[in-house]
Image (cartoon, rainbow, N blue to C red; front, side):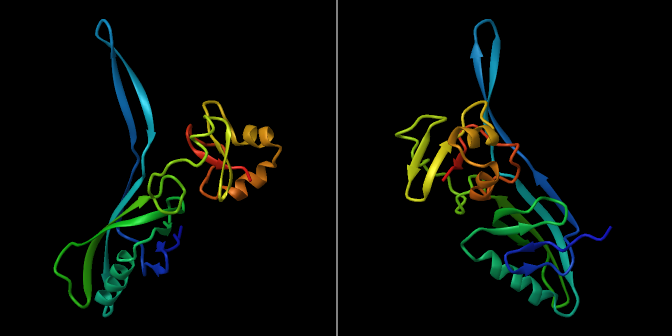
Length: 191
């Protein structure tokens, strides 16, 4: 099987990195209860982190690394297309030379952090409408109407609740990559 090349913004790797790993993390809280027992509470998933190592080889290896480094210095997230991982919006969080570079060979490592809240900035922000509407209620801000996901909500159920087509909600929420997987507290645009 031939894999497509890895891409981030306008940089396309000449060949895919040699090694990569994807870290998934869930924050948990432990609450002690009487008689030595405890209860575990999920505080939700955090960002996914893609790390890897690779080499650029050939007479333009160092120029290729410099082009990758120039993308690192951009202060915005971008679309990351990985040959086996899902396409996602991510921050270019780290780039490291693994040895002294030569004109014809550069060993490097990298790190990308997935944008977790879909706002394009990768920062946690207050949910518009959250103050005036509780979980499961629609809120409104300058960009449209929103629903805050409550326990038991599904995207199909939200569409039914607001008289919208499921396909329309999928169009309005490109950050929801899997319509069958939404999270409590997540904002879903409904109009």
